[in-house]
Length: 97
Image 1 (tube, rainbow, N blue to C red):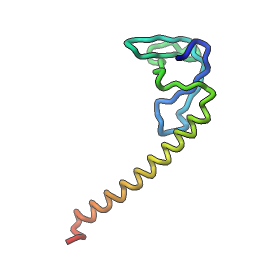
Image 2: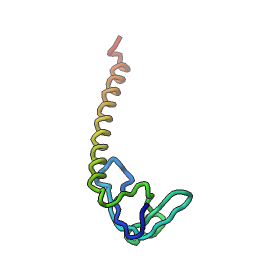
Image 3: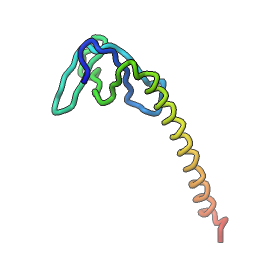
Image 4: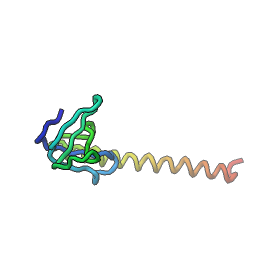
């Protein structure tokens, strides 16, 4: 999918738009049906990036928009769960008989 010289962006955390990074692929490998790339001549094993986390650099703005929306939705979900926990606490305190 990606070749040496391709410009990519990636994130391993789809909840924080600030974690989106970019670079140029300088090494490619495939191990056990899983693709890996390394960028900007950082070729240590711990520097590898799963190709499933990679996007063409041209998609960076769209990726940021998706991650930003996911962040908003996660906050809305967390806020809604707070209501459930508050109700559970009220029941535990015996406010409902």
